Length: 256
Length: 360
Ligand SMILES: Nc1ncnc2c1ncn2[C@@H]1O[C@H](COP(=O)(O)OP(=O)(O)OP(=O)(O)O)[C@@H](O)[C@H]1O
Ligand SMILES: [Mg+2]
Image (cartoon, rainbow over all chains, first blue to last red; front, side):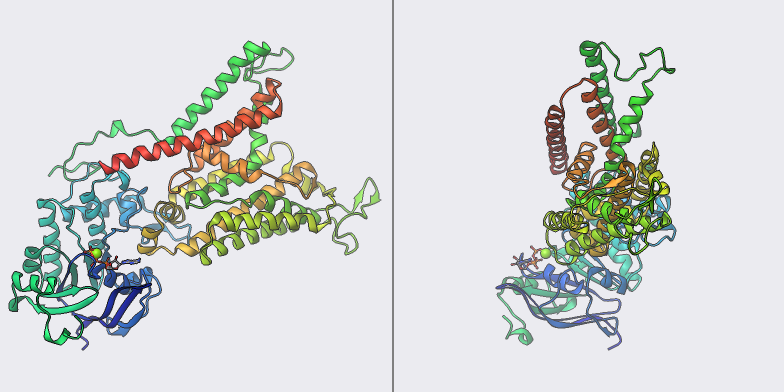
């Protein structure tokens, strides 16, 4: 039981009449890499937003790192050790790359409360080191995010997650806009995290990627979890059958 | 992979061809407008706008005019520094003019002299209570506290009830003007102590304006406070998801804007040696205009104190220029209006251009 990093019980989110997430029971253990798959609108991102307290859940319980938690805002989730690459990336368009990488967690020279002096040099250097791992090409990191390509933005968001110490990393379609080379680099980052024993939740539509990198696949369909599959016991065709609704696992039969 | 100091991955980047910061554009506009008045001066008045043409005074420049140009925008400039930060977060503050009025009335009541020309000043607000000839620190504390209080209420309303800044500060605008009128039932408050009168005397307002501009210019550029201010204006959701305490930060920004309105009230009432209930009317609009002319984007996330100071200078030059050309104040207001609209159009256009580039 102490092995469990994150556990949810009956996690539910309704947007008015839209039942985006219904009764999700989910668990991830130390060092485990779990994929979440499912069609568009299946509730994957909604699930992430409830765990990270970007939104307040309608119902359900969440345990993190052995404790029952009720995060009030994303800062609390982040401070507890959950690092997230959101599907929307959560970048500030008018700020440059280092500013975005360290947003909310700036490196400072002197502590003067809210008026603490920023250490621009240290942040630049750490930014370049962090970005190098993603293999991204950016001509000038002092350029604002609004002038970056979709893939460059995505790499900034990924580097942000990989730069800070954490207990759980969540990535919501991190390679959706990336080129072949950058995707390979990001997959390498995920492999490194595996070697370091860091748990990862990866949301992806890319079957090859999921089969290559993950230990377990959880399938969402219309707001519900319909399958929880060990990689060794399944294959691409099987997973697709669960995604499309051709199959539902016995223990989730009531759900579908 | 060859990594430059600017980027990574070996893409070409020529640091010499950096794009021009928007402040340069505002500075160029300032120079052009000044030159236009110089030219009009020779054409219409046969006199120089900028240069000294009198034999009775020394120096190349018309120093008296240059001083007035800065002095007459200093007090509203102080307000504009606060308003700039509010606008950068994506908000607006319509209350500053009224807050100046209320604060001036209240602070001045604690700054009144006990005697006028040897006679007791029995019309002083707190004469009966003996609160006259108080040390300078008293009205200063009261004035700053009033401004801060009004700003805090603005900030708390906006951050925690989520009503739009336009509405919250409009409410404060009306309420604070009410306070200004209620305080003495419309009577002006006059005859300050000598020490209070010194706050706004001579060129002191300019120095206060400059000091505040430098302080907040540095804060916006080099501190966490500044970074979060821009981040919130750029994308409030991203700021929140990145772990910035958005609500708390907004309260701070509006409170500081209120505080600066308080400073402006102290300087203004001191300069005029009196406080009146109607003081500061429309100052909020001039302050917003200075920021907008200075390149601060009304949609948030962009702008700087340098820009606003330049915007204030443009304001000063236009007012002085019209006075110099002996044109009526009506024209002044019409032109001011046109310039404000022009600045916003320019901002929209600039924004469309960058978003088009981003979409490519
Ligand atoms: N704020 C909201 N208000 C109303 N409905 C919402 C809101 N956010 C999401 N939804 C709905 O909830 C459902 C689940 O959305 P979600 O973003 O979780 O899908 P997803 O599984 O991440 O899909 P994708 O693969 O396209 O990213 C969708 O039907 C969506 O329209
Ligand atoms: Mg999604």
